[in-house]
Length: 165
Image (tube, rainbow, N blue to C red):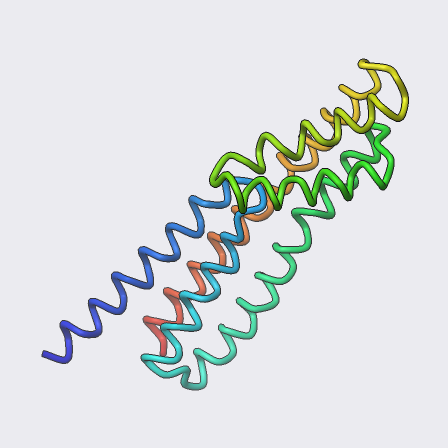
């Protein structure tokens, strides 16, 4: 009977981790945080143990780095494309609000429209506004690969925890 509970915990944890990993496709979606919460739940229910606590600390650092890299790469890409810091900050806020009010694609639409619209209003040049949008999108694309890779590492660390813990 106890094995059924353990396998149910494994299934639920793996399902939530996969949902977090696949959710990374959507900008602003906190996929790494969701994966981290799944590992936390596993640790609270199953126990951390010596191996688990160290793996969870590493997972925490990876989650924090991955959460910061997203906005940082979008901002750097936007700046390289010529966007002002004000436009970038408003675009990130628009992405967050778009995701909250119109999930899952509201943020994908709101952030690019915000940066392009604000840059056009600032410079009165569609070509420059497009370059700012393209730079921000490039930054997001690069950050996706970094976050997805971190998500795979986070999940792999959890499986090591399961097998060694």
